[in-house]
Image (cartoon, rainbow, N blue to C red; front, top):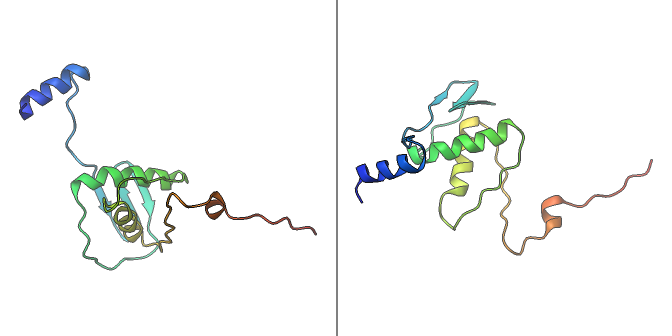
Amino acid sequence: MNHFEMCQLFASIFDGNQPSLNAPLIWINDHQLQIGCVMLNRTKKTTVSNRLLLRRNVHQLERLAVCIEMNWLALIVGNSATGKTTLIEMLAELCGVQLKTFYVTGDTDAMELLGTFEQVID
């Protein structure tokens, strides 16, 4: 099946809407970072890194930025070496914030994620 046939099939299934291949716009200055419709504050200027921002990652960055803007936890899952950590590091670098990571495996206990709570009596 060629590209034209794929677009026709997509349009027949999704009421004529063509898939968008355009990535969200990215805009950055000293104080703010905009990814698509999300505006995040930047805390400091960042140094230039060797990271490349690929078009296919911009949609993922925008979704992650929405979670940050709304103070939601983001659970990023996927196979090993698919760019999950790099995506987070890139967004933190663009925002000029320090990133603290915690690697979760199948052996990770819930108490490691939530921490322990001790009752304080006054």
